[in-house]
Length: 264
Image 1 (cartoon, rainbow, N blue to C red):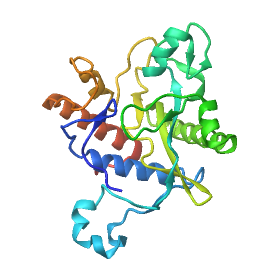
Image 2: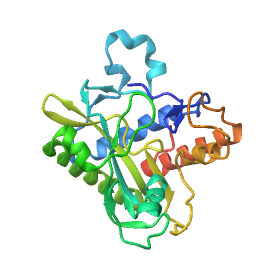
Image 3: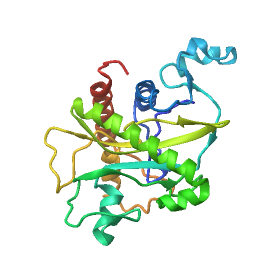
């Protein structure tokens, strides 16, 4: 798997890349894959390019830091979203129905408020177009209650572990998504893990519910795109240099804060 510097928003790949993005996402995913292996095995074989197949030897420089050798698995066609805070699409749904993905919540909650318990709110994994939020029952009907229940259990455990660690370092993981695949009969965590592309990261310092939060993730890009007359279908708009630079800085900041490393 190779992580590029391309970035997507609203399920559309934008024409403008973010410098170092692929390296940051790959290295941060590897950090979390290592830190959560005791919770659930993952698909990583190695990220040491010297251990890659000989056929890739001429590409070591390009693959270094932005790739990992993984097991080939059968992907499960759902994204396992966990929400610890009421924000984004969850906040929009709550305002209109008092629910998030069919889960009733107490009245009077505010934007960005911490939820009484993290919510498991899966969505479909579409090859084209936008992913669609679904209920646990919908996912269970497709996968079976045993598999769906296990996905929920693992997702919540991963989120709680990551959330505790991140908060100890001054970062709130407001929500994130996990992906899984089957290696024979074994369930593995796959794709990326708790990165700025798959999560909402907020600074703990200054956090206050009832308003939008500053972020260390691609919400900065989404916020810019929301100011445009764009219908969220391809082709995506070109990002200006200040948005590119601001996104790059946010990705660097969250990587260094979470891992304690200065290199990218």
